[in-house]
Length: 283
Image (cartoon, rainbow, N blue to C red; front, side):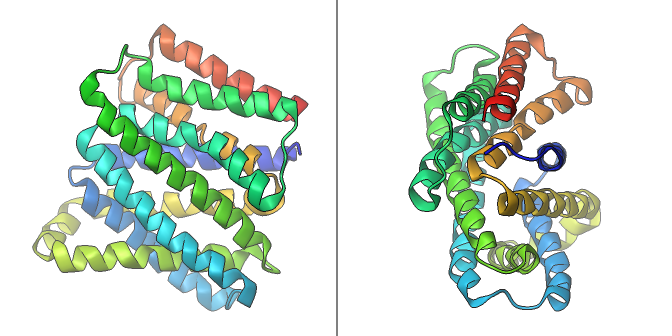
């Protein structure tokens, strides 16, 4: 199922926004409180929105509640991954492994069987993204632990992608799902921070509230766009396009943060671009 052109642009925009707010997190001093503030911001915006969109349909609630749990496990394993590994090492594996897992889950749970062309495109996108981890050379034995945690994170990403795809399609309108998901998923991490990091919250907010609020607003916008696309198009296509955020993050790192690019990353970028082309032309 080839995505309509406006959905392709929407998901690529979501990927760009996702990369931008991850760059915000990368530059933050306290990643745990920054992530907490990001999701608290999303919860506040979602909390306002729920008064305008109303309650989700009864069929939506099981997916919504399961998604909240999976999302919070994702945040936990993402932070654990970043504790033992670099962002450039963990992020591409976590994001790049998820499209192929989405293919398998969507086939079983939603009956979405991709064409051979679509599978080739998704595989190229995934290989290109994961290869960004190895752009600086071989991974040492010490790097195996963060890679393992990143793969668990990628599994959780694939899981919530499919859960959200099924959930948002089970209601009459996508907007209640989007609003309530953003509201509910920010509650657990906020309560945890209030109970475990209370003394640190005030000084953190004084010095770093702007990046957190900006990141939260961008994160909400990015995933709301992805959820809308999941409501309209095939999950595997949306997932593969959305995870090009890793490529955008690499470009931001090279052009804005002056991290360098190099020929290996150019090859990875070409693989991802070729995968997107095949996915849209032959998918």
